[in-house]
Image (cartoon, rainbow, N blue to C red; front, side, top):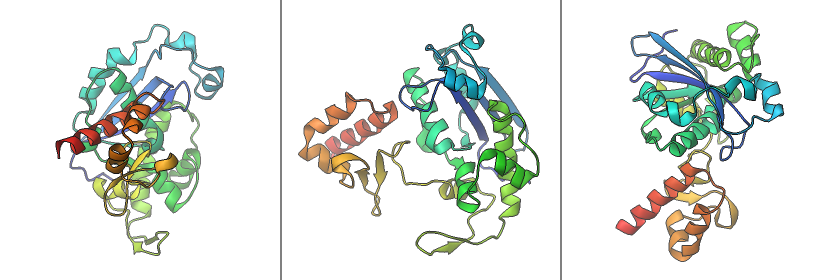
Amino acid sequence: MKLHLKNALVFLDLETTGINIVTDRIVEIALIKVNIDGTEEEKLLRINPEQPIPIEASLIHGIYDEDVKDAPTFKEVAKNLAKFMEGCDLAGFNSNRFDIPLLAEEFLRAEVDVDFKKRKFIDVQAIFHKMEKRTLAAAYKFYCNQELTDAHSAMADTKATYEVLKSQLDKYKGVEYEDAKGKKSTPIENDVEKLSEFSSYDRNVDFVGRIVYDEKGVEVFNFGKNKGVPVEQVLQEQPGYFGWILNSEFPLYTKKVLTQLKLRMMSK
């Protein structure tokens, strides 16, 4: 099935030094851009993470320090990557919780401004888990009836994700879904905005969900002693809380969002 696109859609997969959004780095990135006319462009890059790759990570994705010692750093390729992804919506497998937040951190560290707020995000894993609850290899077998023989290779995983989404659109066309509140809908449509909405687990303001929207659309903290409390209320009543977050090990993007909310509050 050909995707109905208003913008080009980039499928992506990252291989990294680990799973910590704040401290880990990209060692390989695979991108498949599906243009509005259906043509495709591929980009595969090895990245020097500028830190040792733990053996536990290397045993999973097969990339070792020696493999990336002469590769460019993310900062050296960031502008070209941003240009390749410019104006595109994004898709991946578990991408809303890992790939996109980590990629946003890398762009911020490289001081390359990418406005992710204007993008739509499709998380194929979220669709899969909500409809079937399995893994990428199982998803590929289930939807495409093929074995994923090169799992944890960035390009193989990216291509599999693209194929799975197209098969999901075929399989779930007109299929009814009932959410936790009993609301029924047929959410799987060939529409990036609707797929993005359905594949989002939370109404996050930042990528990792430290700040979320409540039922009234107000930004509230989603952790610690101020969980559920509006951000602006906390910033007014606990002025030191802003500085604590900025000086603690929170993602750069979370700090950026919090700073924007504080500036908005101050401008009122």
